Length: 196
Image 1 (spheres, rainbow, N blue to C red):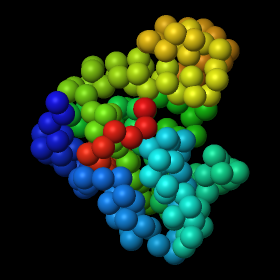
Image 2: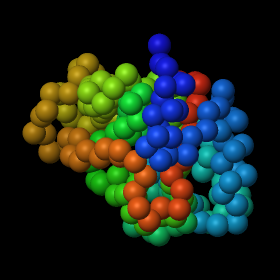
Image 3: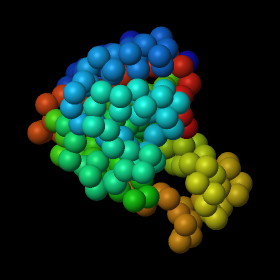
């Protein structure tokens, strides 16, 4: 069972702004209020898609998402950026694995405000467990979703550290704290299972 209190304390000690929500709808309401009349972009995120964030925020912002026909390059220049994580350690580390690099790059540089939307299923007890989760749960599910010809997509059970040309695990990012330059980096913890 995930320890939300411990997770919040550790994230805040690392310098992240943290908000907890019982439902995805409450978190979406919060973002809808926070991001208004500005530019916002999205990293590839099933969580954000399940929350219906793109159409909601596009109604009153300049919204860019490569899943909705926008350019991943243009997404690097918006005021706000929304994505999720492949895993979040209760000790406070945010972990993402990426194939193209646009999602992890955008969490490192270029935006004044960064928001991570994280379902309760993404929590792991510590860094090692979070890295394991990112590699062996999130990555195979994403490879399956994308129809990749990789051992993890075929079997759906774990990472095989394959050398397939269709491998989506090509870059790993770990945030130990907010990067300098971002005005705010928020983690929105949602007490629902969302994404992979």
